[in-house]
Length: 223
Length: 388
Image: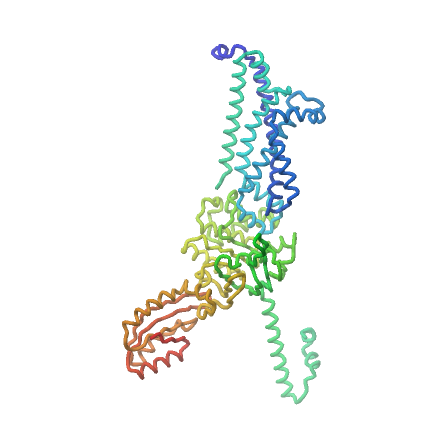
């Protein structure tokens, strides 16, 4: 009763559908961003100065790409990527159509965080692994990643929260989700209660991500 | 020369064409056998060398121009030896030890460890060679994300040892370093000394032939340092492991090393048995290090004060080395001569190859007795110096 008087115009079925869309877009893009960001971050770290694969050219190129994509405002990035998305998925509508922009927007951001996390790994431990006769792949998988895992997880938490925001913006190109609902049903029809309800849903999602992220960060940190 | 000898001793002697009457020939044969035995012993000694460093230089390029970290070092370390390198920071000792497992590559010269030319090999060969060279570090360098047991297993994982065998071996090593029951702990839950014990266990996992210790006790308190050093000596004796350590603490050298090299400005300025270096330091830098542990300076200053209180008689300084530290010199002096013997100050330091000590005494009595006593003392295996 209470809910109905507070939110007279909210269609809860639609709201739930939009929430699932937002969760889907966030989940998929976080997953792919995590993998892509780690690969890019490792590349940045290893090719940087005085490191295992020190290579000025690779570092400069990767670094520039990361900087460029990190600098473009997301709303512009979406528009810029419309032809690419159309080519890739043959449509620019729906939750899947938002994914390329979400990932390309977030992966460089996360890659930078991965690079910073890897720099924090104790150099002595890397040297110890080398002294034991470890290959570079062993050093990556068994030293660099495990030793930086708390920072990698807290980084992806921050990125995931940013991605929730991005999915709302992705609503502009008809990707659906809570952002889309708040804009079309709430703002354009002047139904403040719909906007408020969508905002509350987004807040719940963000809080949940933060709590889950903090839990794993603390659990993995044995320092 | 050995080949024909191996085929047949008879033929070898024939080949040497030994001539003369049978008696003389017998002696000749004895002589030849002796020479060959000595030759073979010499051969054996060559084979016993574990590490050879020859004419090694390491030059770093910096903005201010080239910096020579290691400048022409020649050293060899025998199998089963505990070899110490001491020097102040910047002496090049750290660069030197890191070249022994290829963490640094020498600019010039060669380094052989256990028959592998570590200064030349690369890639897989170098990684395999590294598996038989353990290393421990000043800051332990354990993986905080792994438990103690998992840390010890890490080098075994690198070597491709199956899981079951890894667990067995790690538990065995845990017992060896005296950390039974702590296998499931994380490094952050251990004290410094315990962390270094894990470091040692990890370094020993692949049964290395050499253990490199990079300032392994410099971050530990004196008591923990001693317990870690005792563990290293124990491992050296039990496993016959060759140990090379670098340090800036003479105490470490004195306590566990057989031989020592003193480094300054990238060069080895003094090299020898620890006992010999302690008794007879030649270079200024070595004298400073020796004083650190023997506190000779302090005692000599105190001595000058003391001497003023004894206007008659003589003040002597006895320096004992090795077995002579066990001699009842003072008892003999009192029994044999009509003298008053007054012990002013004394100290004995233990090293791996025996003890080293100094004793200051004041002797008073008739001039003739004093002279004889001095002669007697000098006839013993004791270095005598008349202070006043």
